[in-house]
Length: 528
Image 1 (cartoon, rainbow, N blue to C red):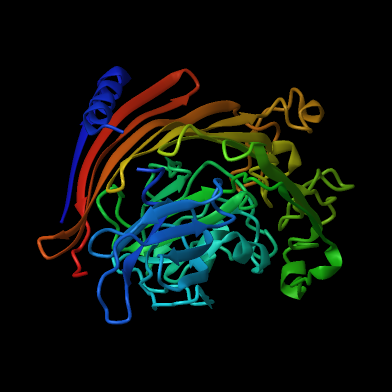
Image 2: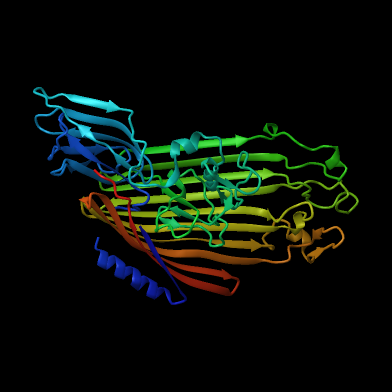
């Protein structure tokens, strides 16, 4: 059962904040992002199949920032450990008079609910049985169709570093436009299609929604996938907390841990690695080159670790990409004859750049409460924006697009069956188009923009300079209730609300909108 109510309002943001505070206060203190985190549950029994209460279940993993997590089986032998970040885990089951059972190399992906049952055997001499390499592959609680991409997969698969290239690795999802080859589509926002239908999407980075409201399924916040720990892309079966139909992406960024770790990479591409499709037909149209690669390079590095062991952790990362190419017919100026479109013009370069900075802090207040803070900035650079065969260098515009994501999050566990999660933050961008800042501005001073209606050629300085802001403040809170053996099965109830305060401005004009969404979901019951 999914229930969702949307309320659209032009009221002040204060009303939205008050509504969110009402939900939070009445809910009482989920560990962060229940949709992003995972859990392990199961039943411990003896050789006859009888339930074993009082078994100590100890969970360890490099993905955990604390040393270990411990649970004890209930009277019916059941246990649950959550809410867990994606990673590889080790489970140990211990009870006096029984042999210890160890399950190793349990791989949990984003939002996965694993069922791990443990049969213990009686042992007069304490022994340990270790089972490895048998990760659960079926989620018994969810019916969502999804693809999970870990940081290791993202690093080794031959796709570009662009964040939206993650969709290229998802069955049933494709982007419109030309395919990306060696980051050839870097900084290009492409519309998304799910099973052949163009659709809207919800794109969450650490719980902050950065999807555009235009409905094409993309985002104007540009970033690299370098700092991504794991991403889950869902194409169907979404629950009520996903307020839009179609694709939903949930992304978790890398975190610090008790051990110091880092990654440093550099890569480049030379023109000799590219072929050319220039033929006589194109030469007859006065085209002297197509889209030659001048250079491509990228550097990235990150570092994570602890500030205080088992208490305070940090992660910092940065990356830089730059690509320079030619464009079909894009020229730097007129040829020796002083004219355009005669085939003797010098070619111009088209540059794309993306710089990114990421910071993440995690603080364990106590066993039941944790705070997480994230700040990320990515800046898209296109100093020859608008370039093409009929718009030479002098008529282009310098475009900068810094985008931000920041959040504060409370992860709290009230009981072993009740969790609350509260996220507040912002995702948005500042689009800055500047003709005076363009490198060619001095060369065309006093040369107004003009378009030849016969040829379509546009010359002179770019006709306009403008800037705009677009983004949304967000408050999200949800309360999870977990009920075992209730009405003949296992039930998960989640109640929550999401509030967006969206703003858009172009020059001096501005528009604002508040959106409040309440939802109630119940997981499909299953017998234990």
